[in-house]
Image (tube, rainbow, N blue to C red; front, side):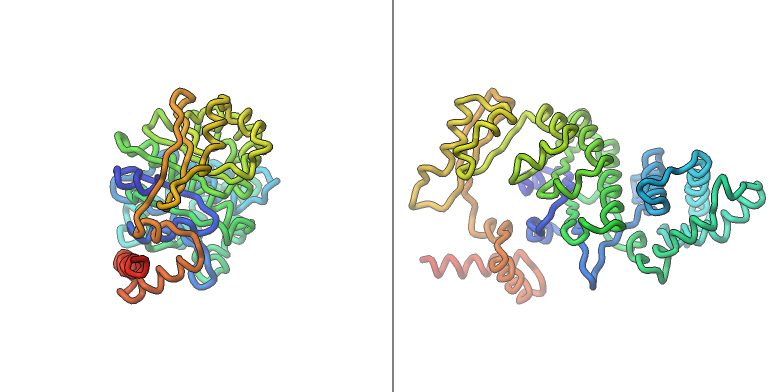
Length: 371
């Protein structure tokens, strides 16, 4: 489904756990944000691409990010601190306008604060109790050059988030990190709202895969509620995927927002819930006829063909069970089976890392073996 949307020109932002979309992302050369020790996750919220602009929402997202890094979860910020940060961000982008040779990133923002903004505060006689710039610089020092997290906000590649059509955030390795995870969530929220408001006439989709428990912070659940109520007005779609319906309904906010605003419901094989499907039927608002259709999935498949069935309900007015059968090449691009993914990558390496050529060669070999 994601591949089909992509081929129709849709902009897709996807949050995943488990690297399910790595093959598809490599196929179309999308942006893949993930974390490993030798290649940690990198963003650059200060970069503004061609056709983008420093609007109010962009400023607000940078402020939200800086406050999240500066203050601990239960620590309140003062109005004066909020105003001071607003002025700092505005001043920094004015500074960039005058100094075209300066690359926008957290490092140069930190330099600006220390070298240009501190003297300005002193000249304006801003008191420490109103905005403690020394404390701010000290707390955010780990994100500056040479600090423990100096990679996080200083990316020099994968920068044009507004115009890139497939962006995947793989959060498995960072979902328990008190630093990396909140930053990633803020980046995701700002990114999709930016696409939603600025890409007029272009379909955009945010798809949240098996990431529910990690994402159910108070701020993100409110964001989901907002998205599901407004996304269609901006020619957008919000999609959630889960193996456990309880993950969605564990948050009252999300339960109401998602289920009440989702006209399209797609269910795969529900055999394991056969004896307790009444609960799911009630939650999803399925009719008895739809329940019978769902429980018929994969019960009488043609033994001579390799396919899976899927139930799709459109607004409760049209419900069908469809056969999904893909080519060998598609299967190899989508597979999440570890051994198969490894084999695909090994074949890609034979062609200089070209995953398309690797998949073609492996598919031909498998077809030959089959015949």
